[in-house]
Length: 466
Image (cartoon, rainbow, N blue to C red; front, side):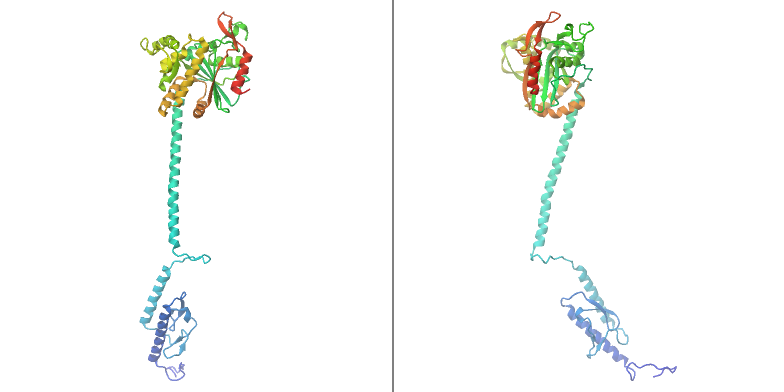
């Protein structure tokens, strides 16, 4: 066959020109048949579809079971994809294919991948149960965590409150710097024992340096959990170390001796501590000074104390209380006792009169015993008091004392006080009945001549276990 230019055009059928309308019907019928088969196979469970080329040269999704098979036409003839005249199929078939592709994409994307451990036996309905158990475990842990946080916050608040309270006490104390000391080499000492000298005086001002009527060495032994109150008699005849009392230019002579309570008059608290260390060979670390009249406020802060008072003591208390009433501005005869009794409840004014009583019983020996009894009863009452009473008690003490302890030392001691008050308490007196004799001083005054080796030996055993 030749075109207008004389060139030959090959005939694909090998003969006469093909019927185009007939070819169109055959291809469309073959395509529709493939779609029908695909639709039937798609209804069954299958793996992921495989895209292939349709007979018209366009993409369509072919089921894996049809992969590799040729498309069969209506008349049974087989064709490979891509063969034919290149005519496009009608729009109806192509549209159905697009809709099916969209549906399969949505269906595929909606599926959720689930990992299955095939080594475990199947347990139906366990996933929800495990989820509920996990949620329950979280809920159970949550209250515990909250409780721990709340407890920690409460502890933190209490610690901060304690700090504030202690600092309030510390700021009420009057601090004195330690003056020069000339003798601090006593043999009786230990890192486990803190010796604080309690100095009590009848004077209303420590600057006056009056004679000290009460000298008690408070020894706190933390290793044995024990406190010991040792009263030193005011009439002990002692040597003033490194002090020229008689002015002869020499030290440690006969003229450099005096009663123990006079040491505070001559050289203050520092000379008094040096004198005790030198004569009794026991270390004195710190001191606390308090005037007797401050005891009135301190005892009243705990509501008074209970004491056993004899009839003779009740009458004898009137003499020191007469002076106290003038100091307090009370009317004559205020708080006087006319008779004694067992566990009489005494207020501060009455308890101080009892502690200062000197001329009933064995004079100053029994007086020191009364002083230790008042302090012991005061601490005993404070231990059994409520928190508000304890606060008043601590505030009263801190407001009336002077000390050479630093604020840091007082701060640390405050933390130990709750434990110290529970320690075993002992009482001593220096000298004991076997450790002295009556004598006369260089000025003719009556004094106590001390057996110093015996006293030192006893202090070593009682305070340090030596």
